[in-house]
Amino acid sequence: MKKQRILITGGSGFLGSHLCDRFIKEGYHVTCMDNLLTGSIENISHLIGKENFDFVKYDVTNYVHVKGDLDLVLHFASPASPIDYLEMPIQTLKVGSLGTHKVLGLAKEKKARFLLASTSEVYGDPLIHPQSEEYWGNVNPIGSRGVYDEAKRFAEAITMAYQRFHNMETRIARIFNTYGTRMRLDDGRALPTFMRQALKGNPITVFGDGSQTRSFTYVDDLIEGIFRLAHSDESEPVNIGNPEETTILEFAKEIVELTGSKSKIVYEDLPDDDPKIRQPDISKARRVLDWEPKVARKDGLKMTLDYFKHQVDKANGEKKTN
Ligand code: UDP
Image (cartoon, rainbow, N blue to C red; front, top):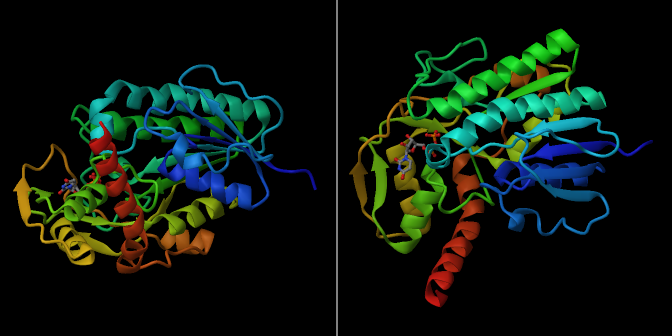
């Protein structure tokens, strides 16, 4: 059988690089495209030079060209942590809108299937709980998070338009909070921040009173869900996430305990429009993908601890040599 060829945009980011690994393992030829705005070569350095892997440094908000055939395109390029999209609001809007348009155009030209990395942020600060795919969301278009939320909502809209108008095969994954190796220590998200603070013995910064909830998915579970969705017949959005919900205060305490840290918890202002609750309803993923997460938070966090220890040591080393 002919080798399947896949393009992964954002392929050197946290999720993108894990997807590169998975699709290489499955026997695909992988082209990883990334402008390295938030991604890092380190995440894919072990793949560079492999026969089945190419890396192209490119910004997909411009016309995208890829040589040869493509069977599948995964569009994962985007800043994806609140700090990143606050610092890069225009790039975030551009990659979700212009970038999605360009990558859809490429997939259409190549007659490839297209999968969009969408997000639970399309539900905004949700008024129903847990969130199922039927919910339309509660998003502030002009708030600081609006640049990400609205870009992804537009990305879903244009993906559905290409599906309906151009008869393209498209898939949409609504990805909930995910954690694992290759997260950046300084991306401002709760887990890397709490790990860094706990491992250094610094105060743990909980925003608001910490009663807001999130549901965290271990990266291997997420990748399995994306892999199944990419090969499924489901053409409408599917939530991929772990329904195991926690308050952020509880989460901070779990990390203090896991690291054996003496860090104290301090409270800081809640960022604008920070969702108060979030939990995926994954009935649809269970039904159409026969998928559900396998890794409980307490096990996933344990598996991630060594990675964060190493990152903190590395950052400390770099500081000393500077
Ligand atoms: N958060 C926090 N302290 C931090 C970073 C984040 O309390 O140092 C909170 C944040 O306000 C949010 C939750 O943790 O309620 C998850 O934040 P994250 O940035 O990981 O993801 P998102 O808000 O996009 O779900």
